[in-house]
Image (cartoon, rainbow, N blue to C red):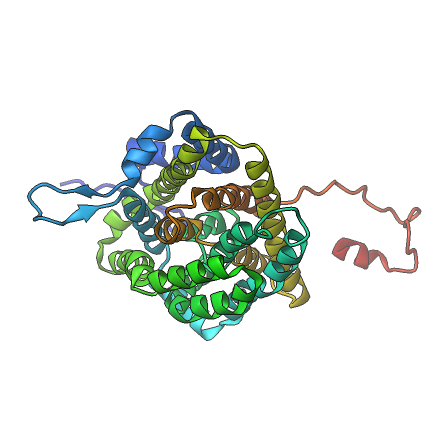
Length: 387
């Protein structure tokens, strides 16, 4: 029997051919990742043009054969899908580095929790001077519920796209969610004096709803399930699933965006008022811009590296607006106009995240010659390479 010749020493073995379906999913995920902002804007346009399917999917549906009272909701399932895919992409060993070097985790958590306490009072002071009858309490309530939420699950997708510290971001999603039963009531109580008495009572009701286990079962468990699957799955199966995980997470995040936009735009389109959406976009843009700027400035002042700065910036600027929209719909069903600032912020934070993870373009510099050293000719020629 003739054996095939062994590979020569020093020569790598030929690579295995990737299946066509896996290559196609990876290619689609790459193309979608290059146009994430446009894809999100397209989801909002689809919700404005066809809100009925999204509003139908938002309602809980009974599952036949599972017993009376067993219902499923599309939005929590999509959120769990995004978090599961995020946890699946993170090797468990890399999470140990977050524990051993928790600088990024602690800085991101501190900025995420401190941002609403700094930004919301400034926005409230500006809104109190507007001719609004309630002093802008509706807008301020929406902004408080957004800024007090845990780190958005979709931030893991943007972190991976921007080459950031994804294990630290997953840790931030875990930790901010685990602490939300404590941090959410504290933030709401600290900022409730900015509201009128009616909205302050509504905000207290929303805090009680948020502390009844939704954060733990809707965010922590899917992420933990992804990590467990990463451990127990065979290597080949894990490699095949990991190729499609980014595109699957992005598709789930995009569909979740469409559902939330349909729930906010449906009642508004029935009774349109152009002043309210303009004010909602203005207030949401101010909160979004200040949050991202605070995260970027904090990362630069502390001297963090580029992956850590990306993680901190996204953790400070991206909040779980989907959970905020659910709380508003539950605690304030008679005030659907409060959802408009949430809708505006949800879109703006995704556009801002796309800008934050975009690599800056540098202009090529003309090489300095010995005869023309340029400005700072006292610097040695060796230093020009560093500059």
